[in-house]
Amino acid sequence: MTQSPSVRPNEVDAVIVGAGFSGLYMLHRLRELGYSTRVFDAADGVGGTWYWNRYPGARCDSESHYYCYSFSEEVRKEWKWSCRYPAQPEILDYLNFVADRLDLKKDIDFGTRVTSGRYDETAQGWVIETDRGETVRARFLITGVGNTSTPNTPKLPGLETFAGKVYHTAVWPHEKVDFTGQRVAVIGTGSSGIQSIPLIAEEASQLTVFQRTANYSVPARNFDLTDEMRREQLDNFEELRRLTLASPIAMAFPVPDTSALAVSAEVRKAKLDELWEVGGFRFMFTSYNDIVVDLQANATVANYIEGKIRETVKDPAAADVLCEFNHPVGTKRPPLDTNYYETFNRDNVSIVSVRTNPIKEVTADGITTANGDHHRFDAIVFATGFDTITGTLLKLNLHGRGGQSLADKWKDGPRAYLGLCSAGFPNLFMLTGPGGPSTLTNFPVCIEQNVDWVTNAIEHMRETGATEIEAAAEAETEWVQMVVDEADKTLLTSVDSWYMNSNIPGKPRVFTAYISGMPAFAETCEDVSRNGYKGFTLRTRQPVEAA
Image (tube, rainbow, N blue to C red; front, side, top):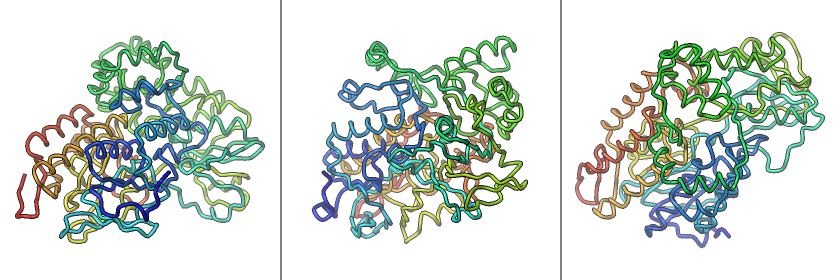
């Protein structure tokens, strides 16, 4: 059972914000090394994004045998995944299993939101306030809040007048929502929309999908795992781990070395046909090596997917809307699906292009579009994603050296060295922060690398007597520019997306992810630490010692 704040220490070595994949492993590492630690999470249990995202069809799109922790042999041997792509309840069960197995919950304050953090320059530590009225002091503040944890709900005129139920996929009710016999609107066709639409369609009397951006979705091809498959994964763990760590996207499958333009159309189609049947991210990431850097190569894959959509969807008008692409394939977050396009063959499903026929207003009984059509609904589902990358970090209301707020520093875009630390904010570590590779990789692999690096940095400080670590402004500037320069070599910066920090009106348009891959990032981080934490300033209570 969670202790009440009154019996917990209010001075600790580290405060961790978030109890998902990042926060749980960070807590485990620090605790095993003897650091006093407290964890705060607004949820009533562990899980992070997997606690909140309970919408119909919520499922991981990384394969289960590498979308998990690798650090514990006991956990690997004791836990059995049921299928290739586990659903939300199973992933939440897994994280609870890990938290219980490692006895982590006793150090977590659930139902507690961090409302502010202020760096005390005299004490060289953080003063953290919570919504339960508690003040905690910590040498280190470590955020594990995730990149997709603050929901984005569009401000539609008249939404407050709607008499029916309104849902958002990112904050779905814990109890089952029954859409049987209801007229339902789903707004948004990103990953959560693509996963939920087929299941909502099975219950609703009428489902209308409002699409702003057509997506290139690929079939997931999920399947149950057999005991033989699980044994094979355990027996081959070391080799699978080696492949995972060598992969730019941290997934245990081979990296292609052939251009899409270097083979004949017949050979290319045969390859894509084969991978279409295999499904999942393997279609995009094991086919050809120039899909996201060469527009002509990209078009070969984009045209292939469009052909599959038109082959599947029987109504040409619906297919036209589903193929209203405005970006090269792979330049927005690529979704996977189960029977998504097939769903538009149902008599009770229709689709509206918000690009050509925008939503004018929401009324008490439905939605009116610009062309004057009025659609009556009993429920509206927003599948409109998140204020990604910076949204939750900025909600923590952090103030660093000289009282500078993180929001002010990042007003022109997020700035962080290695995606982990921001100049002017000593002793703050941001797991999977902006400018790191997390959003372009398999998250648990990136999380483990981040946590291990942060733990080693804290251990280095203990061994050397340093009490403060801070990213140097020059190193941070060079890192931010390098991230942008590398991204500009690809097609990803040619479109608006949450990769570009531009999915929310008013946010500065800047690329926010390290694109050169997980192995290169890990080696760079190791080089930084091997060279006395190059790019950081380490201080003690005595005069400054520059790294």
